[in-house]
Image 1 (cartoon, rainbow, N blue to C red):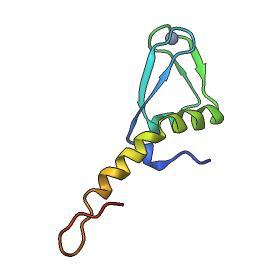
Image 2: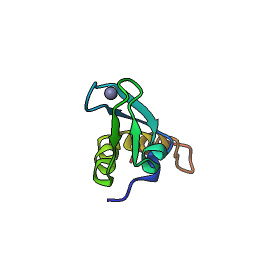
Image 3: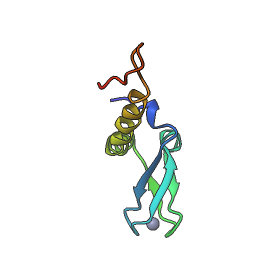
Image 4: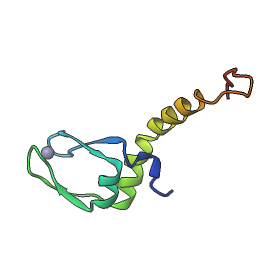
Length: 84
Ligand SMILES: [Zn+2]
C-alpha cells in the first residue's frame, strides 16, 4: 500500500515507544523521515517503511472524513444536494 497523498497536510500522531510523548507532524514529514529524536526523552527512533504504512493506515479515517465534506458540497443542476 503506498503512502497516501491525502494525508500530506494532515497532522499525524505517533507516540514515543519509550516515554509515550505524542509526536505530531504532517503526513509529508513522516514520509520523508527515516529516523528522529524524541522531543521529550531524546530517544533515537528509527522509522521503517512498514511502520509508516501502519501509521498512515491508523489515520486513514481522517481521509474519509475529508471526502465526506467534499461530497456534501456537490449539488445537482436543480440545486438539490446529492447524497452519495
Ligand atoms: Zn520519548
